[in-house]
Length: 414
Image 1 (spheres, rainbow, N blue to C red):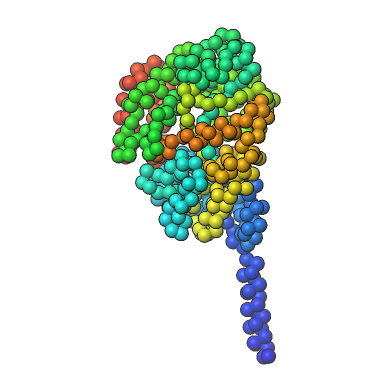
Image 2: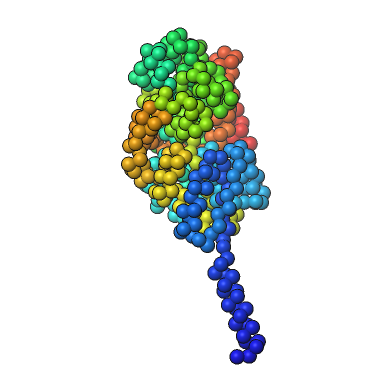
């Protein structure tokens, strides 16, 4: 063989060797604590795709979503896979920056019945764009300190029977123990806003985009929460503040209404020393609602969309991956199959060994598939501002809601 031919063959073999060992770098942008689920899944994904290197970029909740907003607007520094919290899915989808996963080659709607129905609705914008895949959900629950309730002579049935009974229980608790029942009356408002809804209905807007904030549902939400404040059962501290977590640690706040994931936060970092003292119950009045939820999306500008879709499916439709996040990180699965595992029946030690996960699953099965709108965060911000005026300035409820409608409509027209 001539030297030139041998050199050519050697070069060709060298290129083949390089291609065999070349790796695709898949960039995944996430936020705390969702990044822990990704980190735990990387070794498992590596077994399936040894040719893919997963590069995880994680920031705090606010910094991450701000960075993703900028990246989608500019097209710069876009990841292949984007972790998102529920409040950003519709906004980013209707901004045109995310792949519509309902269309080929993804065809995500064919996987729809594998997830709790409300999580699929949360991942789909009002315009019908399937922008993301659900990873974990937050079935709503009332968490309460049983030791303090026992001291006050208040039962779980009294806490959950109705809002009137809930408020009366809070008054009894405060009188006998000095503890507040909840951190802030806004929690009551937020729950009632999500009550009585049916599949396809929106919280703030109807299917024609009409603003709904003057409806009886909003009036009831504001008036009930106002009564709770007047009864002195809330500590007037906002969620995630230092005062909020200190109230749980010291037992000066005896309850909170949030997603099932709160149990994990209480156990892991908020108040681990209160192990065994907490219990989980349904929301007052038998309401079924969700708090939060995490999703994975693929930007239109992603470089490795095929591998990105493979990774997204791995994170959301793989039972073992979903169960690992459930067991280790208290992330309640959006995948129904994962909640059929025996783990769901096991007692939760932090919650006094009660089988709380079974109750959370029962709640998840009843939560309606509420429609989301990209302007929901705007409406929520306006409603929160008017609600503060009702509590702090004694503004008339109906006037506050009328002003909220006008403000939202102005924002919509921009």
